[in-house]
Image (cartoon, rainbow, N blue to C red; front, side):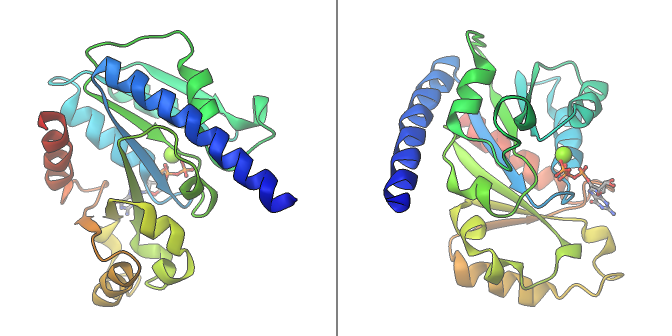
Length: 220
Ligand SMILES: Nc1nc2c(ncn2[C@@H]2O[C@H](COP(=O)(O)OP(=O)(O)OP(=O)(O)O)[C@@H](O)[C@H]2O)c(=O)[nH]1
Ligand SMILES: [Mg+2]
């Protein structure tokens, strides 16, 4: 019975996600669903991304958090782009992920035709966000070197649903004794096709490769 309820919930989610996807397609936008454990660096990566791309492309952000608009305020300080805040505590029982209905409600009647890229910053969580299609073009996860090499093996769904992994905080890899080869091996054991971009959102190292990947998606 419970399994049946969960199946119904996920199929209802998928129907709404498909409507969201059509909507974003009408805008002309490529949509990136950015997911990670809390604190891996999603917002810092978005700060870098907005800083470098906002002059050349039309961008928008959907920010997901349980409470508060701290990340939206940080992004607002970097660039003047439309940002919609979702607080799951307000109408969704404090959920630890975004789902398709939350995205549909957040964009409401707003239409942003001519938008090149929409970033969705999911709630920081390495489990539940991976289970929900929200209508994105691509799921991208951020892992940071402080989390340990074993995480792909312990949280395989998140690592396997993503097309791209941003390995962040490489500036402190040596300080935390990060075993890069073991981490890459573990990533590819759960997701052989995973594209991995190594970067530091703090220093900017590796960020150009991430921007190039995004621009290739805008062009295609
Ligand atoms: N050393 C270092 N610190 C970083 C880097 N990127 C982010 N940080 C720091 O990591 C902390 C968390 O970064 P955020 O960007 O807020 O992480 P987040 O994933 O958006 O966090 P939530 O939205 O709360 O899940 C902050 O103190 C950042 O300054 C990096 O490349 N190197
Ligand atoms: Mg954040």
